[in-house]
Amino acid sequence: MRLIRLGAEPSAIGADVRAALTACGAGTQALGGIALIGVQPPDCPVPLDAIVVLPKGVLVIVGVDLPDPAVKLEAPLGGQWKMDGWPLVSQDGSPNPAAEAVAAATAVAQRIQNMRAEPLPVSTVVAVGPFVSQVVQPTVDLNRGVRVLHPKPSTLLTAARELATATVPCTADHAAKLLAILQTTGTPPDARSFLAEGFSDAVSPDLASASTMLIPKVHARLPLSRKRLPQSSSQSSSQGSPQSSPQGTPPEPPQKTPWTFLAAVGVVALILIVWLLVLLSGNDDNAAGSTTEPTAPQPTTVVVDGTAFVPKEAKKDKNCQAQAFGDVKAWLIANECRELLRATYVTTVQDKQATVLVADLDLLDSPSAKALLSVVSLPGSGGVHGPDGKPLENAAFASGTKGSHVQLTFVVWSGGSGDAALDPIAKSALRLPATR
Image (tube, rainbow, N blue to C red; front, side, top):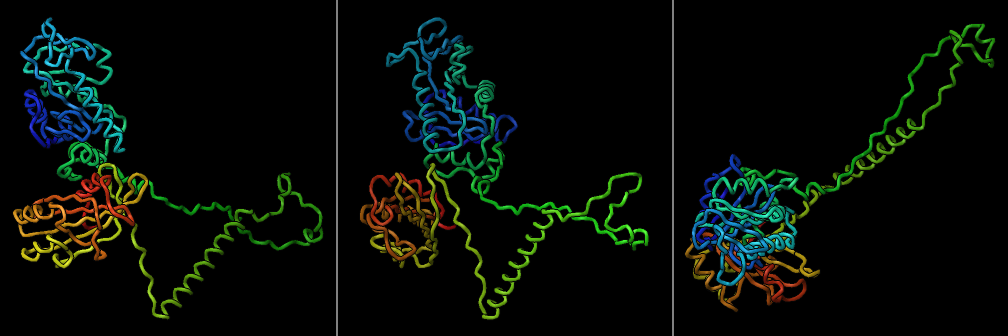
């Protein structure tokens, strides 16, 4: 189990959840998977103590702080909770706190479905404490995929093995997409980390769905060659009459050339003709001094938050200020910039095509990056031109820093300007590469 801490746990028992997950250790010896600690995915009503992405399922862990320790907790989803026989009274008057946990898990499952990520069962774990010795749940609640438990390594391991039951394990590629959907900041771990946590290494869907043409193999039965024997006088005299075969077997019918053989000969002849034509035309081209251009590779689609981005053009420049405008250009003139990388993508939003510009400025150090970010974040402060030397007018905009790098994204409708509908695309585009 690999832990990624994004924020503080919203409940006191969340610290026990983190400790239990930490006790699993890295790798698959105990469990495997990636745990996001202190995360609140978009559209989720409350912050969560943890989301655990396993190779065969997703666990949404919500902490519930009880007023006192308990020996026995009766925890039905649709009824009154009782601690050691006494009704548990919540501050908001609800009979139990499970409704909020189930709503949070439902929101996470809905987001995964909306982003069209790898379909995995999403289950709910309600972590209760400070201490509960025994939890009693109705069978119908257990069958719904909800577990109420005091978080210990043993109880969490049992819940994970009971709830993560997908028949097809999640691949490392789809696990990265899941994390990108659930955490809107930072960068998911690399592929090696996912493989080390038990996610499968499968062929990319783009490669698996590639169209491949195979030349069918023709099975032709070739006749055996025979030597013509010299005919005797008796045989010559009996031409025109059927000859008796040895041991009284019926006479052998005359051999006919099979159609499969004729088809094979025709295919071979056609291939030879085409090969000669190509060879002759190639010689003519070489004689004229022309060379054949290699076929350009097709662009690889990049998926971020369920949105597909198709790269179109990329460019690298050492003179950063020459490719900037406005206050950004003035700042770059006064400060040093090592390199500017720019790439354009196209994507489809609401059945309309949009153009995306991704720019990456490599500055001297992290303080320089933060200083430029404070300038470019101001409205009307300018930006950088696209690879064609022109800015994207009235574009949806997002920016961020990573070390000494400043990332900028600009999104407009193809052939027009941007609007508020493109703001989420600009934020997602911050995770696109600025190079191919």
